[in-house]
Image (cartoon, rainbow, N blue to C red):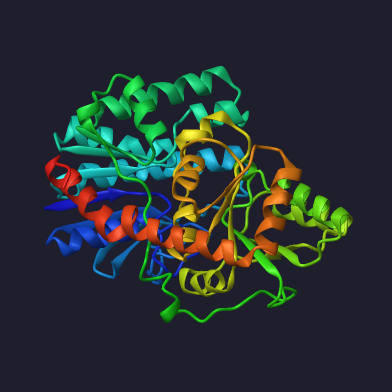
Length: 407
């Protein structure tokens, strides 16, 4: 089978972003299928192509994946209008590919929601099977976050969401809340498969990584790491609030390492410098190999999001699965699906949103009880292998995409 795969923010492991689409495409190849990946340029990503763009596009093969990359510069710090323009331009370019390329199945994954447009076209104009993967609920999330307030824009996004779900022959949800959200739009449960983000056990194996710590972090410090976008959704001011509490308590043996980039990073760095929050260490994005080495030396993973109810059950963050793949206990600062997983498997801590004191208490407990922390880390590693090994989840995903069956 030939699958055309639409993902605007695709990256190989050489990039500094999630690699779900790369791993799923590789799983399709292992089953004897052909994959054409249609993507855009992404500041944190790396497609593996280095040739020149011709008329705004370049094409080549990377790790067996046929890649069509549009010259569409995108980064998290872009303003909303620029991001919207980039999303639409990608969608229009993808529609042209969907109309002229030979393929058997069209697959599209969010975000953005506009990634569903070429899938809709493939379904109705080419009469091709269309599978739609939903990573976030739009427009619910931007509405609750207050990022998009214009009722006309929200209405248009709602229509596009409905059309994408109802055009798809089947859907993939990355969390229970997303599956429920799809059902609420009239999609039958039997047309939805839950396949969450997975753990790349091989990448985060201590035997194949060189542990390292950023400058300013001593071997004796408790190192808690956050790896991901420094944007509005991530609510990283909460981490700086905790740093204030730790400073007041005189805990200079705990370091909060924020790895990544994003729209709010400069503001966060300015605040940390202004308030002399020495517990916070900022580091630029790193690829998966370097990230694995950092996590091999870390003590705790930070799973932080802004206090938005839609996040509670409606997200499947890459970083959480990277943490447990590396055997790191996780400190989570919002209720919901992941908080339940952490509690049920005793693989970390979960605190209430916007409670800096409780957050600091958890960090101090972790620093003062290294043996208990090691037990939680071992539980995290066991959970990763038992429930979220990407090798197993990819087989379920491939069977659903190709055959509409859950393996």
